[in-house]
Length: 484
Ligand code: NAP
Image 1 (cartoon, rainbow, N blue to C red):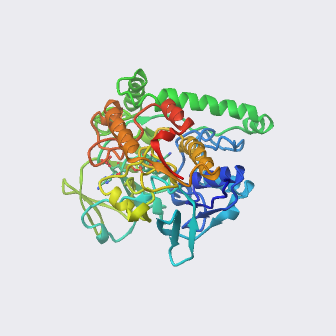
Image 2 (image 1 turned 90 degrees about the vertical axis):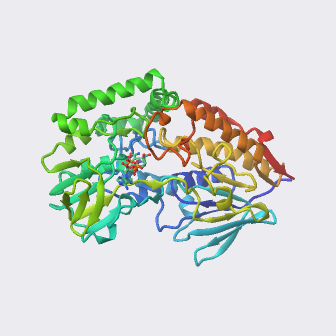
Image 3 (image 1 turned 60 degrees about the vertical axis):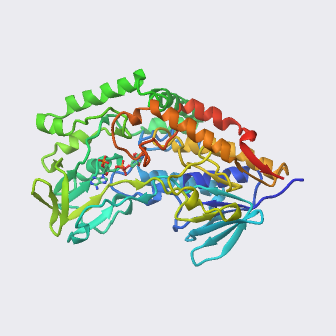
């Protein structure tokens, strides 16, 4: 018997909007998207720091069904991406489905349905829940003594304080990840002094970010086929040159990345002392590779200082490093990354028979093919645990995952079964294969990074992107428990 399931999507970021659009296209109209903020856009709403941009080329970091002829740059700024997402949501009518300012706090599977509670708000029920809550979402605050003692403004990069005065100020940035590097390039012209506190040096791949010309944009508008061809070309380059390469530490492409990064360091940094401070002692792409056209140029400006001595503590007037020196600051920015093991938590999720997700994930999060969790039926995650994050356009990842999930949804809606989730056995098998494959990747060649879990195992997809595409093409139903 055909059914018309009710859907709840959690999160109105890139993946949540995708879900709502695709459900709509498939004729599923009973869909509500819950969004805790008052605006859509996910990571592109949360991150408003100076210089925020996507280091995946914009024509690739676009929905395949919504190419955008108007991207201003090869790597467009964050605000432009947020506007793009808003435009796509509007054009597809899914903005109407979003309940803003409504944070989902609890979900429990009872009597075949999900009961959903929101913060101080209404309750809801759903047959199917899509969790599109993001990965790099919950700020990680460093455990540094004295942080509260600082007299000036202190904030995490994803909670930018736009009231803080930067012009002429002495600004400290803690961290050297993708965020900090973008910040340095954007702040150096504005601030009086820029102090970059580096715990670990980074390899930097120099990729120029040029604006598109009016002629190019007009061509993309007039002949959308050229844009599709560009997307395909970018996808091929990215997949072959990067995504498929990093899972094989000995691949020629990884060696080439190393060479390009080394040449960038040698050719761009004049002062030998600074060059050595900036030289990592691990292999390129072991940590998430930094892509920047201007980091080395910015850090060599007269008003920029690289502080490679460890941080001892924060004091009222600035940061004291372990060599005893006080670096006086007016503003302190913590570009210290995210808690990447949260996923849909802190939502309290309770599956069949009272099984709590917090218990199942007590050691670390896991999921069958990053999409489904045993005993949590009809709950599907986009960009969930152990997916191909960090090395590809997460939009492509989410699109492939959703097409896979849609096949499971069709089964539910077609009356083939009432509930489904991955089996315990299939999830354990997947996890064991994943942990084994991770041993070949560049991420375990001797560095600390957010890819690594508490055991030092990369918590990401350890195979090629091609394999991901193949596995997402069709679910293996024998790996699922189907309840009639
Ligand atoms: P991140 O890569 O996790 O970097 C955090 C930085 O903070 C690291 O340099 C880390 O040092 C440092 N740190 C953390 N705790 C510290 C402490 N107690 N003392 C001193 N230093 C400390 O975070 P992120 O830069 O925000 O980037 C996270 C991810 O977001 C990226 O890898 C990327 O996937 C994504 N992102 C993407 C873009 C883009 O353009 N697409 C832009 C920004 C972010 P260690 O290295 O020593 O741990």
